[in-house]
Length: 217
Length: 179
Image 1 (tube, each protein chain N blue to C red):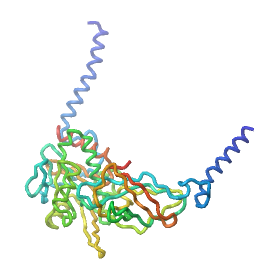
Image 2 (image 1 turned 30 degrees about the vertical axis):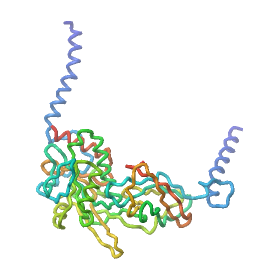
Image 3 (image 1 turned 90 degrees about the vertical axis):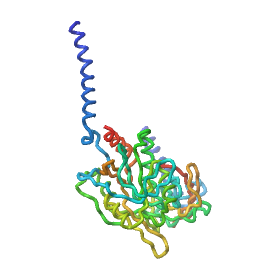
Image 4 (image 1 turned 180 degrees about the horizontal axis):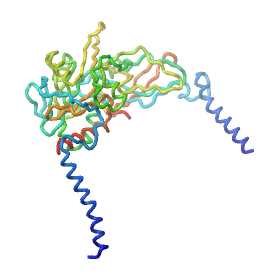
């Protein structure tokens, strides 16, 4: 073999070795090192929602309903998006949930590894039937969660540093205030990222892709 | 010669630009088109399609007015919903934001703290010559007690009432997301 030929071979080997190193690095990363940073809020000391349960009124043939109560953790190898809202919310809630739905569509088959749990902050008006139909409009893989007591709602909110208030005004209207972030929880109940209102489809899809890659490796 | 032509062209252009502005102030002016007769112009009006069982909707748009004016009311036909109101989303106070977290931006921090609540507003001041946006998370026309879900592709009218310009009928397109 001529020196020239050997030279070509080494030039060819370099990219292969680099590619292999990259592959090894990616596999070796595990869950600790995410090469691509998340666009949402990542806390130094993550919030946790394992052990927190909310009454589950999910009733759909497409997705198996769990027990009467649902622990706010993802299925193994999956992610759980948690959102506090109410169905008579015309602006903030549908805007956020539509962003999540559009981001899930972009994921293609990987979307089967993402569930959505909506916890109503207005359980008095959001009956199980209403909540089911509403959350089911955004994804087939959902949990319609309707706290049965104020304590149940406050405990769930506290885990996420979320809050809400329902005020009945003298004219009969109901004013609902609620924190507007959505949260992504892994199978251990660790809140991996929080998305503020208006986070955007691109950012939401990006974060889900990164977290799904990480949880798969 | 060339310089003079340029000057004349500039002067003619200036007059052409100034004319519609003057015409807008005078509704009786015969040479104006329909658009020019109203100082109000609405662009990009849309409403989000309803999730199932939703009883409330919201319409968004950009409002432009050549004069200072004030949006004081919104209405929809009873075939669409019981009624409509102009609403604003505001911070309701209370903050649990953890400052140790890695924040994306100042905007992110402001939005992540506290609760947001939606309130009816008595009116919105529209500054002449400026665009005012009704958009998700801000001002919107709230459509209350929908008769039927808003379906993608559907169009319905929202009537906005301005203090000076009076009633303006706005065709609103129902979409999944902003245009």
